[in-house]
Length: 178
Image (tube, rainbow, N blue to C red; front, top):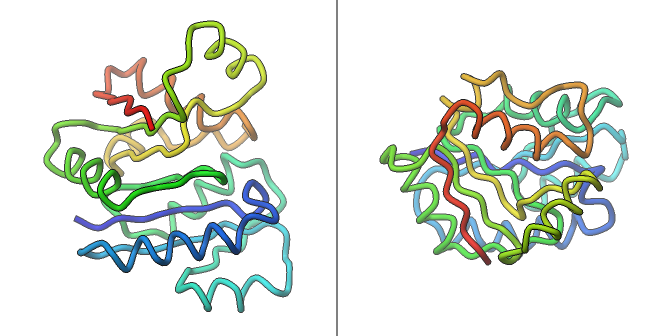
């Protein structure tokens, strides 16, 4: 099993160095083949050095919506399991390893780490505001490619849209509260 963790510079914003540091520590604690990719459409001259310091591969992209940037990073990745952590995620190595193993063993097609178990009203509000219902989305590359990846025209709605399309295609999705 090979994991690809993919971050977006614009979404992470000023939290990017802290997030890269936390993910680097997480990756050290995991066994197996793992890569960390950073999609960048900002062109910030500090990013190549920052990515190198944390063992991440920088994937320059044009100034396009989030869906297109993430698709570009996935195209450069090698993972069988694609992981899209949110900017404020506190991801445990145990959760990530278990989620990846469920996908690799084909017990699940996607695993979603949710911030908490929100009620219907909270889920509706998140959807209307274009917020992702996930802190972390793990999805098998096979299913990601089967549904055509992220909609390249979508920005904040890219992750919720991908989850909706996975559900519509009867993918086996596990919602795992944080």
